[in-house]
Length: 384
Image (cartoon, rainbow, N blue to C red; front, side, top):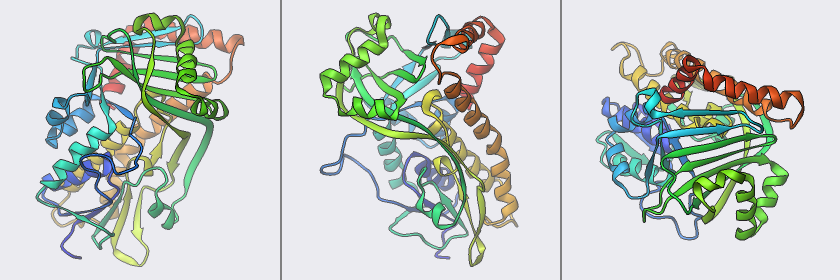
């Protein structure tokens, strides 16, 4: 089969990380997809996404020899020291790295910078070859994202719930230093997050992720920059005193939100008894971005699959479904739990006013004063 052990489809952060992790374990990888190396393509829109990476994701990137270079790049990574969560009433919840006994709660990284560093690492990986089309290998790993065409061609069913919401992402500049504090508001019917993120010039700023009903989001995307900024600062309200006036640093991006989960994560390729397929990342599961865990789940998938394949019995082929079942079992629990948690929070804060509003805000405050529960929640977020 052309000498390749695994064919990886998808060249985002999950696919690149999987290829690198398999390579360091001595497996020969064919990587399908168009490289996105230095600079944007002519006419391409700037990538304004930011990722919140937990400790487990940082450890993976460090093993892949990517993290030190990313952290050293100006404007690529910013540390989160504290997190403040507010409800749509008096409820509030706060986490701090000091209370958790860690150096930071998370790192906010530039999506494009992360993919560039991963691409650079792939260029020097000894067992990874970039190819233009899928090649025959014992295992086909699908990392194509939530709208995977290969998954659809294989007829894999996906349980899907569209929220009727759209997320708006942007880069912001602010008047005052953010001091490493991430801020989030849960309010019916929107969720707004300001993630501390400094520009390459050292200018203090934030990565914005604002989830709103689609009609409202469309109106905000159509608004000019001054109008959008006015709406954003009004939404932040009195909390704007901590950051000062927020201004757009560039373009805005938007995408529809959904909860999704593939019914099957692995199987035999039709007509090829000796070949199998497996799903990772958004091709396998999609969650609401309110907890910032989407990429962390995908990177954990890549780490788990690489380890399972690398530690397999010498006699067991890479296409063995019992081998792939080990990976699926390991990842089923964490991905299901994160999906349920984020979905529950979306529905909990979906309706304004009334007794439900009072109860959810009391709940936030109760959790804030329950130290053991807070430690458990923070630990889940840090380790995935």
